[in-house]
Image (cartoon, rainbow, N blue to C red; front, top):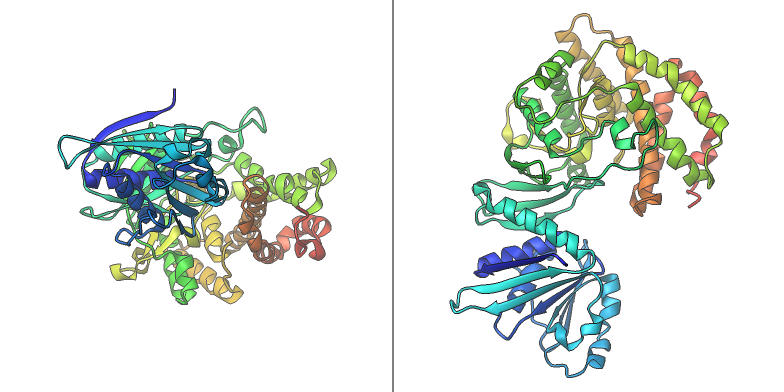
Length: 516
């Protein structure tokens, strides 16, 4: 039986339901609006369109006379179709409904006029007037992939209804990242909020020692990890979203909204890079106060949401393996031979031995870069307090150089070598003042080695995003990753490792277009 939701709603609640549907709408969808004249079909359609457009107050014309209204949005194309004036399904076919659905999603009023054109992935919405003129009965029924999505929307609706902070909220889709997480912004609340929608995910296939990639790499398994790291960072005075409501079993959270001034977007608008990156470097100086002993004590705290693990050899190695597993086939069109794979593993082994033997250990966020940092100069105070941090749920105990190189060798935008050098020196000077015995030579090696490890991993991830997930936009960053890797591998102690990369990915391969 398909998932079905029944509600009685007033007009604001009807519009909020439309905003929820907008969170899950996809290319190929049909939203079929059933009901008599005056039942609220057009109200629902307009609220849904405004939500997808991101314009809560915008005017949405009725398609009654034009029959079809289309909207091009960065997220997907929409077509709003009114079949009331049609008398035969052939007339509807002439509107090109099937073609419109291949390019985007279609919202159809009076869908009973063309039942064979409604598509497989369909959300049927039945609206009926009530005796109380301010109320409507609404029933939603999912078909195809909408069955699962509608079940998820029901969980989200129940979560929001139980959270006093979300009372009366308007709900707007937010562009997510490259993960399974989705986000929505809640406005018209006492304070701005973000809904994190992270449904529990099944483990992937076993790839080594009977374990999936996510387990070996110690990736977070749900919202509990986000809460645990969030509260630890907040306890150290760093700026992170507040936690307002959680349902870890269903993978839902309400967190504070730190705004839209993402580092990468601010640079694109013309804001100078160095002041923001300096503040973010200062935040890392504060972060390294959360050493391994602090994390161990945190893990033992009664009521902790989820334990924070260690960046161990298995995690480093499985991330390095993304390059032979995904980037090599992308460039050469075939799987990597066993010889080069074994040589790569052998070249990395003494490097990882040295990293793992280094006693310098602290909380490592792993994704400390421009998409996950927000510029908050209005907060004033210390430099580190002007940086908001998000997307840290995969944090581990590791070497602090990892986050510094993640910041100063940003995969998505250029950080000039001279800025990298200045901020590296700035970080070292700040830490040395606090730790007189700080070993700069050992830290410099770790910085180069972990930069090489991270950039190797990201080459594999970007190749995987294209080959497995159909997201080619990440390929444009690959030349930048190679520039960073060349800087990393120029460290004298990494010469044997550099030789493997030079042998198997010479300059002409590094600059070549992928084979795919």
